[in-house]
Length: 124
Image 1 (spheres, rainbow, N blue to C red):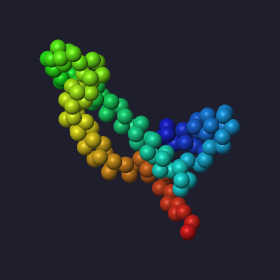
Image 2: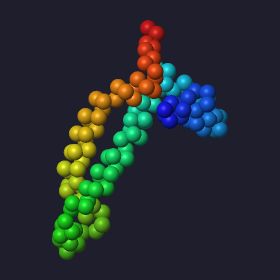
Image 3: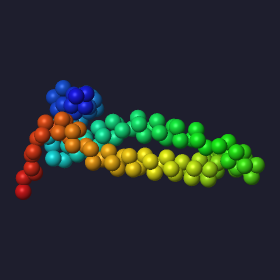
């Protein structure tokens, strides 16, 4: 419901913000061009918190001994990140990727509620 208000063509906050800089915003949810990007932005926003929480919890499982060994070898912070943290976060990355892939098939309700089932077909 909040996103429907944001994307409202007359009173929505997105089109209001665009009008402040001199741009006339489109009819986001009924346009054949802008409906898909609007739904994608909404879906990304909806899942961002969960994915970020998982990625923030991921480094908690990395032992400090890996970082100590890298430091003894003379690694700097960016090298520790690239060669220790990123590879050891691969199970977390795989989990988030699989969960996002599964969630991408469960987007019907978001699309249906935002567009009210509008079945506009672009003219031939």
